[in-house]
Length: 215
Image (cartoon, rainbow, N blue to C red; front, side, top):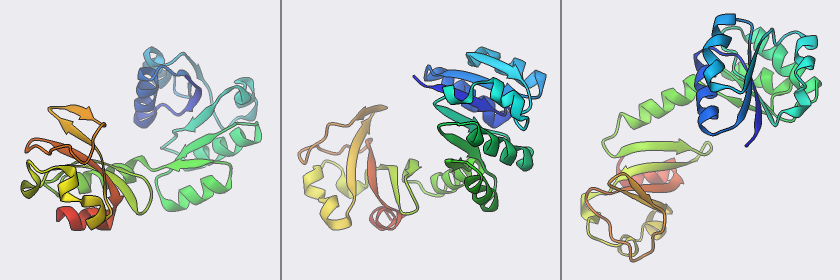
């Protein structure tokens, strides 16, 4: 369990609050809009109405006591930048800030952010990849080259074993797990047989996975 300071309770911030609550983290939520703060109360440990661009207000929260500070402000980049900078000046251990564009990310990273997230850009990429192929059920981007994909088993692989298809040698792709009837099976071996209704979690470069599964 970690202690999280979440600043900004728009739609993105509220989704973060709900997920952090599911994960049983301690969350203090902050927004200058009273209605947003009230809406987040069921999902957070504590909440305050305040402006993250005011040094005295941020200082009163005890910034050094939080494991992670998340700046989820999406409607005013200047406020997001100022809040990010102040958090780092006040001794925040880790600051994660929301960015809408590459230029925003550059400024945030130069002014104190340890990491940057692009919710719209990342979701757009996921949607484009997920819904333009019949073979892909999900994917997680690891960096610019590598990703984990959940893919269906090709017809010519059905009833063959992982050892027989030899995907690692042929395509430099690793099968991490199988999903069968909605249940994940991470304990696999070269003798594991592939079923028609199975999906596979595979790790590799985009190029290798596209070539292997004809995406």
